[in-house]
Every structure is written in C-alpha cells, then in structure tokens.
Image: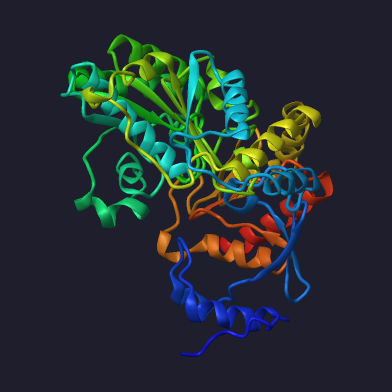
Length: 458
C-alpha cells in the first residue's frame, strides 16, 4: 500500500485539492459538484481573513459555519490554549474533574437566565440537543409520568443532524431521507415573520402564530415532554426571524400545561442576536438551554446544556434506583475546550463586545439597506449580528426561485472571485461575521453580495 510522504509540503491549491478528493468526504456537500467548481484548501487565517495556498484571501462572512466570533488565530485565545495544553489535555469526566471545567460551569450559570444552575457538557450542538431531549423525557419518567414522550417543534426548525436532533427539526433537505428512522414530532406553525401581512408588525404576526402552539398543548400536553425552539432566528431554515414576544408567551404556555421548554441557542447564543442570549430579549428562562458554537470562538468542539435544580434533583437518588442520567461522551468537559471557552468569555468582558456589536450591527444594516429596493429581493431582515437578504422570483407575492436553479451558488462563486466567503442557504444570502469585522470589510461584503445577487437574478 502506498504511504503518503510525510515530508511533502503542499505548495498550491490544485495539488492539495487533488489529494483531498482522493480520500475525503465533506459535510453537506454533493461531492460531484467539485468536478465543476474547486474545493479551496486554506493555509492559515488571521482576523476575518482566510488565506489559501495560492495567495488568495477571503473574508469569512459566515464565521466558518457560525462558530468564529473573535477572528482566526486570535492571540489571546491562542495563548489560553497553549497554557492549558501545557497542563492538562484531557481526563475522564466521570469520577474526576478539573478546574477549567468547574470554572466554566460557574461562569455559565452566572451569565445565563435565572434558575439555570446545573451544567452538563457535550461535544457539539447536536449532542447538546440530544442531551436535553433525553433529560426531559427521563425527568418525566422519574416523576412518574412515563406517557410524556413526545416533543413539539416548529415548521422550518433545525436542531442538528443526529437522530434525535434531526427528528425535532423540520427542514426537509436534511430530514426527509431519514424520516423512516426518526421518532415522530408534533409540528406547529412558525412565528417566522417573512409571511406576515403587508401592514402587520413582527410582534402582531408572532403573537398570531402562537394559536397553533396553544391548540397543540391544550390537546396533547399529557403526552408532551417539551417544546424545542430556536430563539429569535431559525438559522438553517433560511435565516427566518421572529419577535421575542413569541418566546415570552410560549414560556407561559409551557408553564400552564406542565411542559418543558428547550431553548436551542447553539447558533444564536454568545452575542449573535444583539444580547448574550436570545432568551434575554424575552426576559424568560427555559428549562433547558443548549449552547455551543461561539462558546469556544471557533477553536474546539464543546457544547453545554444548562438546566434547573428541580430537573437535577429528579435524577439524584441511590444507585439502586437506576434514576441516574447515564449519558456520556469520551471528551466530555475537555479541559482544552474549557480553557478556550474561558478565554472567550474573558474577551466578551474586556472588549465590551455586546455594546460594540450594536454599532457594528447598525452599520451592517445600513450597508445592505439598498437591497430592499432590489426587484428580486423580498426583504433584508436583521437580528443583531445576523443579516439576511432573500432572493425571490416574484417580489410582490414572495414566490421563491425553484431550488433546482441553485441561484445562491452563483453568489457563492462570485464571492470567492472577490475575496468573500459568502455561502448562501438556498436563495438566502446572509452575513454572520466574526465580531472583529470592520466597516471597510462590511462595505466590501455588501458590494460583492449585491453584485452576486444581480448575477444570480438575471
């Protein structure tokens, strides 16, 4: 068998691309596409920039799948990672513990909504959702309510791609193929304000869509364990957005019908929505809060599920009762990831990030506002540091382009030719950049995105 020469150093994109395509299978990718357009190997990163092996650079407008918040190769986080690696890289988290994991949990409890005072670590977003689902079901079982086995989700929601997380999502592109393998959920209307009437406000529409949820909980609360929701933004669901009033009223409904509320803030937590967590804007505390992605600023996989003392107490008993929550990951509470997460939280404080983001978000909105007048852009919508422009064939009636035409791909390709990593979701061109982005870079993204939309909608 041929062994790769460890001394080989790739010198250009083409060489590395050929080696990649000979052995790798990439996520969310039809690999045959790379017969038509190139896969781009990245050599290094610095701030918002990614640099390839041919000397090209790209503004990382999507934070490398929404994870990078303080820029690539951040010196502060690099130093924290190095320091932790010199002390402890990993230790089993069952029967053992470590200071970074304890300190991170203490800080997460202190900064998240009230009543969330227990932290369970996972490896990634999907695993966090799986943990919350299992905890909710198991809680009701331990409470003598074994019939509460079902979950309620929203139309167009997304919570990950492992089986449990996929089951409580509703994006057909990811879910439809595997439907026969998944548990069945109760899916209700989304408060997604894209479909509001012409004179209807976001608040009015979001409240109106609560009726579907109330009806479902009234009829089936005795068998429902939890409602699963993405606060404020359905990210993978075309970056659709809604008003915080929906969360506020949903919390009341869950209390009224004795159902858990699981808030999946994997994508929107840590400043994306304009506050540290989306739930803050509704002034609510969920029963389970799932966080990840920005928690480690794009450096290492780590997620966490925060829950209440009452949930924790339902599992706390003698071993023989078999009430313990027997869920684990080999890298649970990894010290390297916890160390990086602590440095990330330090930066929020030292850089006054939430306040600074308000200015950046305002400038982003102004830079893209002209697209509201584009004949094939239905709307430009924004929540905090997330902005989206949705291309449509018919603006007045909001009729989408056929997905088979892949118009977003044209925007992506135009971006790559002009120093921009823009990776539209279908026909939705969006920005979710690192918080260190500056005005010149935002203006460049606006210019290239506009050109790309012009090309894509001809």
